[in-house]
Image: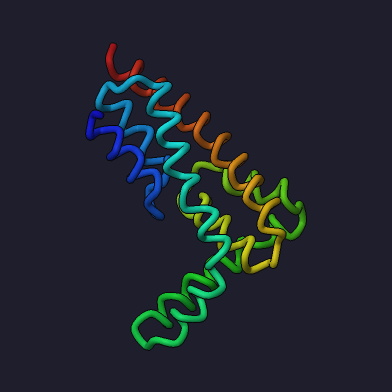
Length: 152
């Protein structure tokens, strides 16, 4: 297997880049768009279910340690300001929130929001996966359009 696909998968699974970084990376390296899309979707979905299952536990652990408590509290405050969308529109709001391809609106933040709001994990997982799929389509369309634009 080409190592670049592993890179796409890992970039998509990483909290800050997610598929918003993975898809342009794969397209930049001239990998087939369909394979890049599917690999990035898979990489972005993989961490979601464990996050939904263990986030409460991880948050409690992080808040107990001096070195991680400040960062955790700051992150939670930042995400707290974004929960209105999900509270007002439920699972559809969660899906749209994750689908918007902007920084701090991806699967990780969506998982944290779902956990903070006590949403049903199964329904939240499906909503987040729907958002990942929509985001993947948008990022792929933008990335392939950008490649065409700059290759002229």
